[in-house]
Length: 136
Image 1 (tube, rainbow, N blue to C red):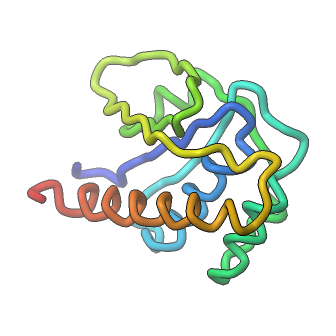
Image 2: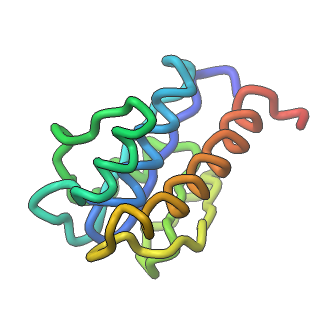
Image 3: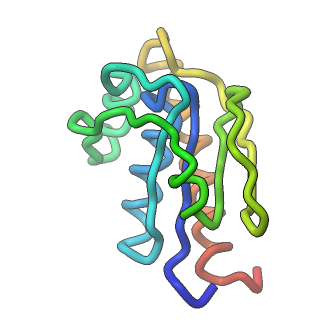
């Protein structure tokens, strides 16, 4: 990709998985990737356990606001990643669509959310390597 790659993470409430993935990719990409997240039915706030799990890594998502998924978000993105939640996204030609089957952190404590965070972390690092070196 000659331009800055754009990635969209989608989950229903945009409060847990997609927020963690977006924060991790922003952290690792250091401005080399444009990152956004959204949901079809956004919650009122970020999942507190997801925020706590990321705080353990030094990342703060407490000020993030869950956002409604829009056609414009999908259209602007090169890669659209759904987070195993059955969300349907509009399909545009030329986009790469991935589904990461992840447990839902909603209603779970920090001990259950840490493995979800770690799974997302591994996937984000792998995605970043692919985006920055498409030869991989």
